[in-house]
Amino acid sequence: MSYKVPVGLSNKHVHLSQEDINILFGEGHELTAIKDLGQPGQFACDEKVDLVGPKRTIKGVRVLGPARKESQVEISLADGFTLGIENVPVKGSGSLDGTPGIKLVGPNGEVELKQGVIAAARHIHMHPKDAEEFGVKDKDMVKVKVEGERGLVFENVLIRVHETYALEFHVDVEEGNAAMIKNKQMLEVIK
Amino acid sequence: MSYKVPVGLSNKHVHLSQEDINILFGEGHELTAIKDLGQPGQFACDEKVDLVGPKRTIKGVRVLGPARKESQVEISLADGFTLGIENVPVKGSGSLDGTPGIKLVGPNGEVELKQGVIAAARHIHMHPKDAEEFGVKDKDMVKVKVEGERGLVFENVLIRVHETYALEFHVDVEEGNAAMIKNKQMLEVIK
Image (tube, rainbow over all chains, first blue to last red; front, side):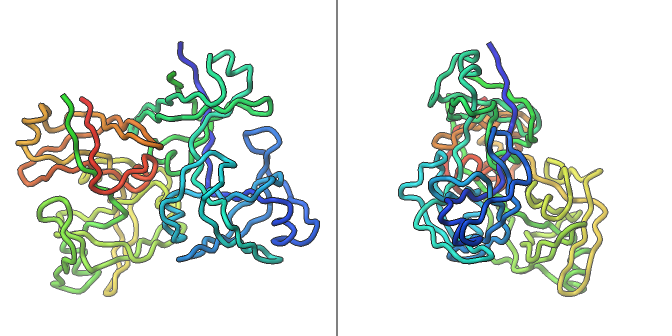
């Protein structure tokens, strides 16, 4: 049986703890939502921060809300090269132990993160009813097939199931460009 | 039967005609080789040019030698986005009809290319003796498998056979990062 998932491309972005929001944007600051994202309750913010790496700075990186327990910086391997952070670890969101740190600069102050820089491991968000329909469960690994000029098969795609999730296949910009896929394009999942 | 090919990662670069070299670097200028490349006779040059797109400029892009019949600019899809050239065509080297143009700026002058901007289609260079051993021929399409965290299978990989070629699988930086592969890493070819 074949089923399909819509693509969600992730450009570099930052998730912040409320503690770090207070330092970067001012005590008690609340993030300003400007656009809803594919996952319910998640949103792009008006706020941006600069990433100051050992080698160079990337200015104006978008903050995503809402606030999280721990700040997390999601970049591509190419961004890591620009910043001077080699071998950015490919990790699931929230798996930050042992990951590199970085300095964040906002309009009100700076935060020196001890850890939190990752390249997000590609994954498929789905609601339990999708998981049941597709016959997969949380933490399963599947493949995703892309047709066309830059056709390829992504292996090691992690299934993440939660009641708050909407069906979406998350890859970063480099993975998206390598396969020449667009946001919302439907791709076939292979078990 | 399984066989393997070494990876050659291509960052953005420019090939120039002698006519354009004369304009950009001065009449009768000869390219200065600073490093041999994986393909015999091909070399990285000391010379660099700026790419001036409709939206932004990318400064200091490496010229590769020797001079060619027609100038050609090889960039990633992300570079195209930076420059303001959307939908950079994925093409084989030298297939430039109908491709976007761009302005090149060198220390001695500027050239307005009418065409020549491509993202290089992934391909495997090989000598006729490799082709015979592997049981493939020029223009065949194969797959290349990558193991590991970002494991995937590249489909639509073009075989290019010529007596001047050395065995090498060429992908651009985004394809390389999407699969987390390194220069000279050996990958399995699937027919």
